[in-house]
Image 1: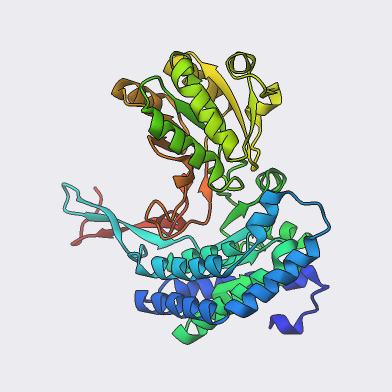
Image 2: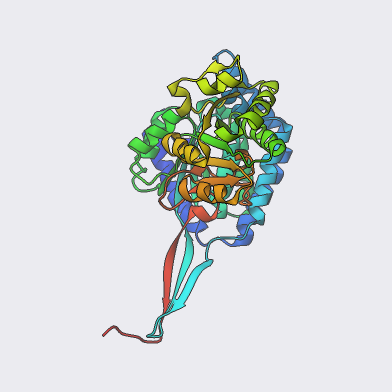
Length: 426
């Protein structure tokens, strides 16, 4: 048992966590939908009941980083309140309400020889999730992995250790009440960075997939060192393009929301592109609305010529994920210029086009290869919950297996079932 292993012996601790997860994954693979849903709803109830304890643990984490000079976006992601705790619980209930992907038939067909073939969803196995300053990920990742029939090993950031552990205790209560192995959702109980290295090694084949959620340095390390597949994105360098055909009032509202609703999330817009043909009508009203909300604007020379007093943009601004109330803005030569700029600087996360011209929208959708593309809507909708997935374990910008919001279906693989009546191959 883990409680008999000294936390100072990281290697032994992590190997035990891996063995326990692999054993739990075998049981979860055949767990009933009712059992998984019972665990999720019971965990949601436990979170609500434990709200004072979770907030007290969060206060302890916030106090520990108060004098570290961390960015406001980091503090925002770390901070919990009653509303956010309630949203965590509601997220678990939403995931419980989703169809169970395990065992669902993706496709079926019959061959001329009479063989009937089915492609069927199966769990991935054991998923390792490494995240920073986001205690809510403890609930989201644990719930999504469970619903998809996977065991999960959670390694939260040291700054959110107390908050994450308080949330994890609620997940464990849900598993126990449903008669499922508590090792199905484990959290690494130490902040030692060597635990991350152990997970990246795969824990002797125990971990099937790694999902990092955090800053660029964390994700880069995971992608460089991991010996197992990774679902990840390095950064959310999101663009929003305002075409000359865009409705002005809508453009103002959508751009302000895309940037300012929550500046510290990966779906926040970081670069605004405005059609040269809309410079006289759309540019100034949009920038004034952003400035009124407290957004710092870093502008190209041609934008500053039209709207004096803005901060000059540098070459670095076009490739910076601010995660703050800062946006870079430039004029482009219509949809052609927008596509060229986005394909040059985008991290292939999320881009939006504001336009009424269907030809502009068609080119935007066809010629930009980011994971999420939106028309006349805020980039802040880049979220699994908003996609009806109940939640997400992250946004994948890769092209293998999972792309975009990684929900329960994306946390499965598949196998083939072939039914015959005695056929032999000639």
